[in-house]
Length: 155
Image (tube, rainbow, N blue to C red):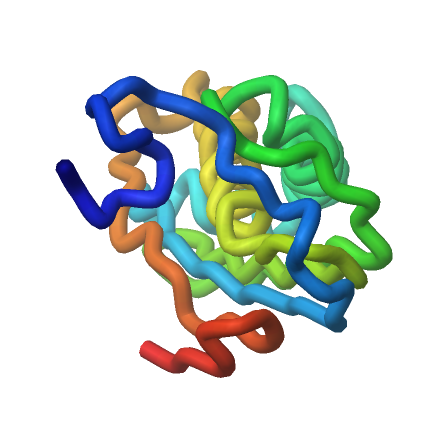
């Protein structure tokens, strides 16, 4: 009926069977950005936001989110992550987040990297909304993935 991997021949949703796939090293990087007022960006950069260290909390939130991706995204396989890293760059009008997720497994970690960067940005919003409720989150996308049957991919 379809060549979509999460649908069977009748069109019913199912979790893909990866039992026959080999274990390989896999890594994915995703990015996104939150734009904000110069005042909010300065408070985040200088560590003066009322809720505390925005960047530290956002980094931990992103790591925790990557570890729980299978609970949030239907049909995702739970993965034994070997690494999750969140890189945050603050400039005059916002924060760019890049998340890297890695595992040695039978399926990729793209969703973990995308979930990590999304929750990182949402946490920044939550912690700085008292300064700027008009912040916007965007540009969330996969940058790279390595490993697996389909090989490497780069945006």
